[in-house]
Amino acid sequence: EKQMIKTVRMLEGMGKQVVIISPPPTGGLDHGKCLLKSSLRKSELGFCNFVGEDKNSIGNKEIIAFVKKVTSENALNVVVLSTFICQAGTCKASDDGTFVYRDTGHLSVEGSKLIGKKYDVSGAIIAAAKGRKIG
Image (cartoon, rainbow, N blue to C red; front, side, top):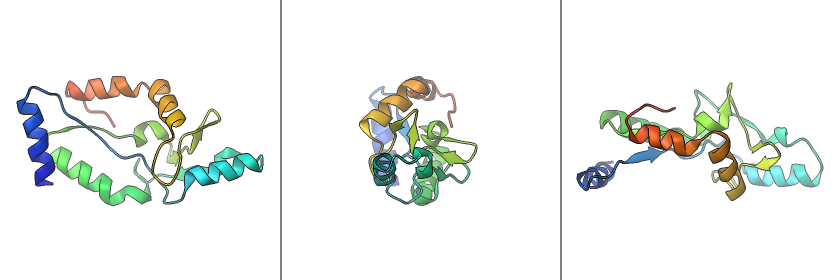
């Protein structure tokens, strides 16, 4: 924690706007594998969606808690990815037929592009850099 804050402060001292981006939410299963199996079986991809708790899924509780603690205690700007991936307590493993995940906790390249464009994640990062709370 101290090293992270030290690094952030050093970057800020160089005139940089630092924004912390949370890890993607995960239900603790291999969502990419689930999507692949569902696709091969011609099953509904929505079967691979998972439940998020308070916008944060069970697989990342410790990491999300760390990010929240560090960012709130040190007035750091943060963008929470579950804000874009999860709605009404459900996190999408796929969106518009695109696999969002490639495995347990990593977004696919295609999924990252889709989420980035569909939800204007770059706009959220810019807003966070300007000090507006996102997520």
